[in-house]
Each structure stands twice: as structure tokens, then as C-alpha cells.
Length: 325
Image 1 (cartoon, rainbow, N blue to C red):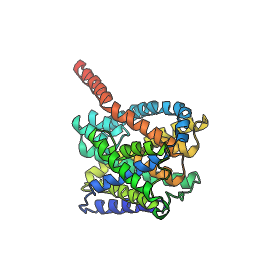
Image 2 (image 1 turned 180 degrees about the horizontal axis):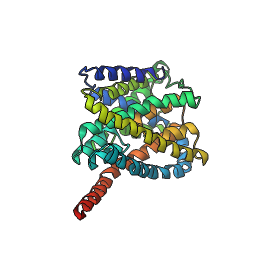
Image 3 (image 1 turned 45 degrees about the horizontal axis):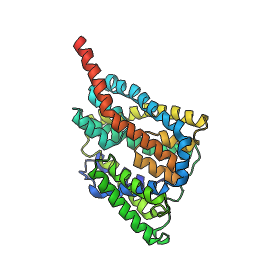
Image 4 (image 1 turned 60 degrees about the vertical axis):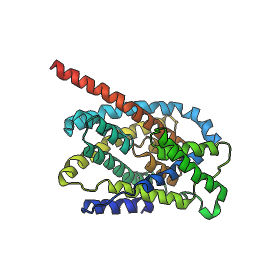
């Protein structure tokens, strides 16, 4: 099975949750495991990657258009087909982080349970299908080494990685950085990678540990689900993923045929999955990690900063239409 440390815990936790077992997440341990991926991405940001960013600008400029296309398709789908209220429909459609979209939606008066299950289903389906597409349709092996063993890495660098992870994570939380557990360590590690102080990614054991907790966390999201929720929210999430997949393939085709990216890099960059999960796949598949991460960061920044503003705009227009009626 591809990615056993990710899919093993994921499907075991999922089956247990669907069987009625009252699982609990690992709390801060699970969040802390994500810092490993932040360090891995930060260590991959080298002067060579920075020099490539100007060549990515045209491709990056497509990301806002991608998000607008998703909103144009997703909001009507959840409103008219799934019969969600306007707030829940909007935040269900936005491909941001699961926690961010649930929090924003809750503050705006949306259905928290629906948002949680729709986004958990989005991540679950995409993470499950992406390896199949890569291996069976694109002929790409998922056997790229995730990193060197801890025994082969300089101890001083590993100490620096731990410090970067903790400082970036907790420092990011203190200043209100979204996705602090990944972005904080990424920023601190990149600051050490660019001058050549850190030259390696985290050890393979650490990255496998991160996969384990990420997979388990996805499965735990289905604890307490009822048959009604399974029919309504999970089925809606699965149907929506198919729409998202179609849009992702369109934008992937654009960047690939335009010569802006290789097929593997374009597919992972525009895949609407979670940043952590796509980072793992990029590492395992041997993709251009810099290209993939830059596009996902751009998507998350636009979604997280723009979602509340666009939601107010959509909801205000909806209220005006109702008042006129």
C-alpha cells in the first residue's frame, strides 16, 4: 500500500470512527507533528528555489482565478443542490484549511458539523485518490526517500531543526499566524537554510511520524457521525470533490500545456487537498517541492484572508436581494 504510515492510521481510525468507537485526537502532539513538515519545506527553500520564483509568477497568478472558479461552482452547488444555508455553503466551498474554514464559518453562523464533515471528506478523498492517479495513470512511483536516517544526519543540524520547529510554531501562534504549526517552522527553517546553516531535511523517522499523526487526525474527524450526516454531508463532500477535481485538472492542463510546470508538479500544486497532505505526497513522489508549496501557500493566503471579506460581500448581496423581494 502506498504511504503506509499515512493511510494505515487514516483508514484504521476511519473504520473505528464509523463503527462507533469514541476516538479522540492526539491534541498538541498531533499539531506538533505538523511542525516536522514545516521544517522539511523550509529546508527545501534554498537560493536556487528563490531564483525560480520569478519563473513561477505566471503560474502563481492563476491561483486567484482558480479560487474564484471554485467559489463560482461551489457556492451554488451547496446552496441549490445540497440545500445548505448561504454561510455554510460558502465556507464549505472554500478549499482552505479545515480548521480555518470551520472557525470562520462558525463565527459567521454556519453549521459547524456540516463544515467539519465536508472538509474532512474533501481531504480524505483527495489524499486517497492522488496516489492512485500518480501511480496508475501517470506511472510515478511513490518510493522516493522521504529523507536520510537520523543516524546519517549531523546532530547539530537536528538540534537546530527542533529549535526551529518549536520557535516557529509557538512564535507563530503568539502573533496569530494562520497555519502556525507549519508556516512558523517553515519560515524559521528557511532563514537557516538560505545561508547554508541547515543543509538537510528532517530525518526519515520524523517525517514518517508526521504522516502517522496526520493520517490518524483525518480518520478521527468522523467520530460520532450519524446516518443522516453520512447521507447528507459526506455524500455532498464526495460529490463536491468531483467538481473540484475537474477544475483542478483544467488548471493543471493550462500550466502543463503552457510549459509552466511538469505534469506532476502542476497536478500537486493545483490539487485542492490539505497543505500538509500535499507536502507529504510531493516529498514521496519526488516533485518540485518549492513549486508545489509556493502555490499551496498562495491558495491558502488568498482563501484565508479573502474568505471573510468575500463572504460578507456574498451575504450582503443575498440580503439585498431578499429585501428587494
